[in-house]
Length: 100
Image (cartoon, rainbow, N blue to C red):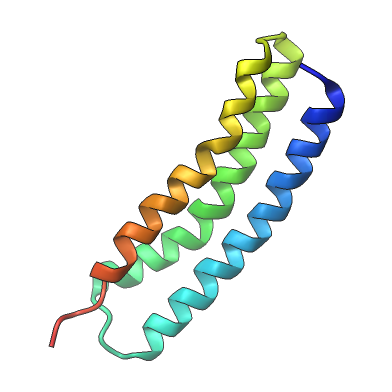
């Protein structure tokens, strides 16, 4: 593993972390303004504002740990974890509002 790619990947994860927080905050605010959000939906929005950015921090931390322990280049795949969390979030969000 190259230190340059670990630093660039970690910087990219930190940028992605800010984007994920803004996505969760504005999407949650938009859904909450609609007035037809269930209690579970409110809970998921609150958790997603921490979980989405947190997945980026955990991902970057795992790759830094992998660099220190010399796991090899396959450790770069851990940078994809936040995208899986985002996909789960995007699949879950449309079903959160109460049906009229």
